[in-house]
Image 1 (tube, helix red, strand yellow):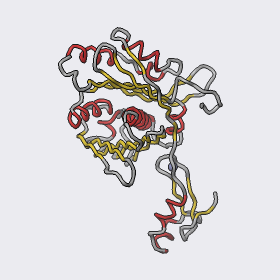
Image 2 (cartoon, rainbow, N blue to C red; image 1 turned 30 degrees about the vertical axis):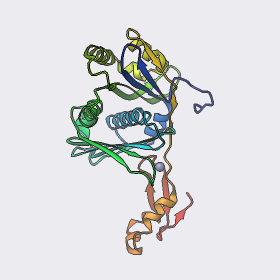
Image 3 (cartoon, protein in one colour; image 1 turned 30 degrees about the horizontal axis):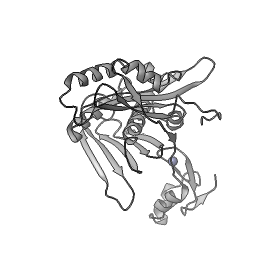
Image 4 (cartoon, protein in one colour; image 1 turned 90 degrees about the horizontal axis):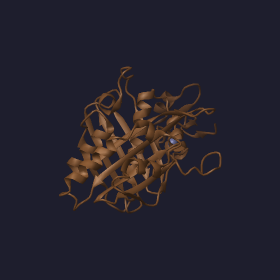
Length: 296
Ligand SMILES: [Zn+2]
C-alpha cells in the first residue's frame, strides 16, 4: 500500500521475467515510496544518494532470486571519499541502505568508481543463525555499480549478466520532488551458452533502457518489459513487494554503550545527552551519561 492508502501497482515491486525465445531470465525493480523513505533522511549529497539508491535497487534485484528466506547484503568498500556502501534486502521484501562518507567528494564525482574508489564489491547471503553464510567478493571494475556487478557475476558466478541501474529525483506536476530508483537485469541461464546471438540481442535490448524509463512513475514494470523485449517475447512472473524497513532500536545501541566505562561515556555527552543516530534510517536515540535511554 502506498502511504496515502492506495495500492500503486507500478512501484515498490520486483518483477521476474523470462524471454520466450531462449534461456534468458531477469528481473525488473521499480522503487518509489520505499526508496524515498530510505534516501530522504540521509544527509548525503545528491551523487552519494544516487549511489545508495542504486545499491538498494541492486540488492533487491539480486535478493529476490533467492529460493529460501534470508538476507542479502551488498557491500562496496574502497579507498575513495565514500569508503563504504551498504544495502540489505530481506526475502520478505524489507530493504535498507546507507553509506559512510569520509570526506566531501569532488563536486563532479559520480558513480561507484569515483565515490567508493578502488576496492571490492561483496555479496553476503545469510539464512539465519544455524546456517552457513555465503559470501562472494570481486574487485570493483568499471565506473558504475552496474558495471561492477556485471563484473562480479562474470568473475565469481560465471553467469553472463547485463544490467542497468538508476536512482534519481522525479517531480510530477502538482506534486513534490521524490526519490525513485529502478533497475533491470538479464542473465544467460545454464544451457544457453551456445546461443550467443540470443545473448547479444538481449544485452543490446537491455542497453536501450533509458534512465527516465526506469524512473518514470507512470510506466509499469510490465510495460517496461514489453518495450524492451517484445521482439523476443517475454513472460513475467509473480511480482514481489518491497518496503523500507530498518529494525534498529534503542536497546541495541544501549547494549553497545554498556561496553564503555563511565569515563568513556562521560566523554560522549553533548548538551547533557549521549546522542546516537542509526546509520541506516537516521533515527536519533538519546541516552543519559550512564548510557540509559532517555525518552525523546
Ligand atoms: Zn535504523
